[in-house]
Length: 367
Image (cartoon, rainbow, N blue to C red):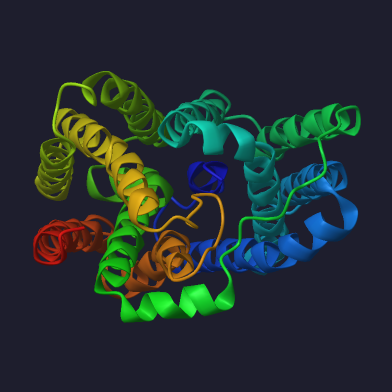
């Protein structure tokens, strides 16, 4: 998933004149594929089982990455849109399958499982960014071919592994999901996740292009900054685990949002490498703890919520992270690359306002 943003400089989108509409199309097709896979995954898991599901996801990912390796520039961008659609579909299948496999661990220790999963996810994102940065002058088809080998290897591993039969997929009943629309707390939490997911993935998808066009950093330097963003997210999660027993969660959450807001301000106004890396540090560290803390709070109030699935009203929240990078592509083509930071800046301000509203709602309702 991190490769979608990292591969863009290797495809030449750091050059002028930039085709930001094509970039928006890539993110949109990836999002459509991921949402479609989520709808398909429920029946597929029930009918074919977890092992078949994971092997299918890995096979499709390997095929999608191999296809993208063959249709890079100078071929028309619409060839790559189809590859991104398949890649998003495989990512959605894999996401659902892995969270099913991890469900016993999540049930036993939800916070610990989310943090460990976030750390491994962050390591993969760092590796993807560093791979593109290290092999930038190699043919971009070679980068994608190397990435295609990863799901292929795991697909072979999954053919040799067995899991216990699924007790039932943790999807919210439709009646329970509709009932959430009458809960102010659920709506506020969903809006919070909507904007926070959008903020995080906007930076992850667009940071390299923003730094190339706005700060005049080299593509390799911009990709290194992206790797640092993921690294700060990952190490920030480790720091959160150490701080949770001794720091009030509300105070930690508020400080994290303010740190991210400050980092975005620095990125918005800087014109040099030092300022860019400083902004990346504060944004990464600030964003690190927001989702785990919010997911924990949601889990206490809404027992059916599971962070790996589109459940109830919270499915709308996940769409923020999927659609925000695509929206930025179309906005940047009209108003310039500055909106890449301007929109998350506004989104982070909205997150602060929503946190205050959630605090007030909890005081009034006593929940």
